[in-house]
Image (cartoon, rainbow, N blue to C red; front, side, top):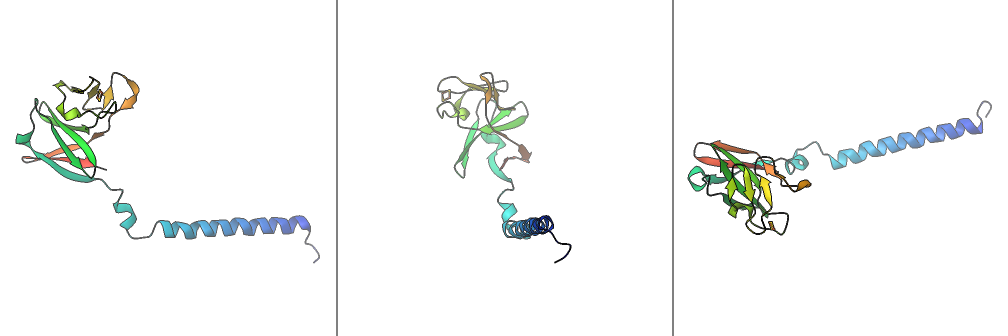
Length: 145
Ligand code: FES
C-alpha cells in the first residue's frame, strides 16, 4: 500500500475510535433522554395547596407534610413565606417557633432563620430552603420541587 505509512494508519484508527465514541454517546443520549416528556416531568415543580388564609396568621404558622417533606408556612405582613420546617440543628419544628418580623426562632434550642431568605445569623454554611408561595382567593399554595 504505497502512500500509507504507520502514522497515517494510526491517525485513521484514532479517527474511527473517536467517531465510534461520538456515535455511542449520541446513541446513549437517546436512551437516557427519550423524546417523550416522561423523564422531565419528575423534575418539574408542582404547586401544592397548603392552607386556607384563615388557618395562618402572623402569630400562628402552619406546618404541612408533603411526600415526606415538612414545610412551615408563615404570614409576614400581607405576604406568606414557606421554609423547610425542620430545623437543621436537631430537627425542631420551626412552625412552632415564635416569629419576630421575618425571623423565626426554633422552639427547641433557639437557632434563628429568616423565613424570606432562609439565612441564619449563625453563618453562611447553614441555610434553610425556602419555597415560592402564591395566594389564589382564600387559598395558599407552595411550589415544591
Ligand atoms: S433543633 Fe432547632 S435549635 Fe436545636
